[in-house]
Length: 88
Image (tube, rainbow, N blue to C red):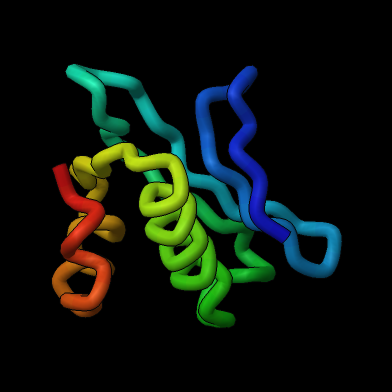
């Protein structure tokens, strides 16, 4: 399940009671993603990738640009050219 947790300034993806997240900072009308993290039990399951896909969908719906700076987020966008349209 995807959620934009405004209070913590992060996007969250919850599976099996565990939460992966991508922290964000608002800058110049875009959301900079400096950190993506998944609990050890979710690593290697694709949960972080599902989180990133949900972020791209959310960005399209809200017309906000994404600036990935976290190495994982940068790599995810490189592997998913179909999500390039949300990059600021």
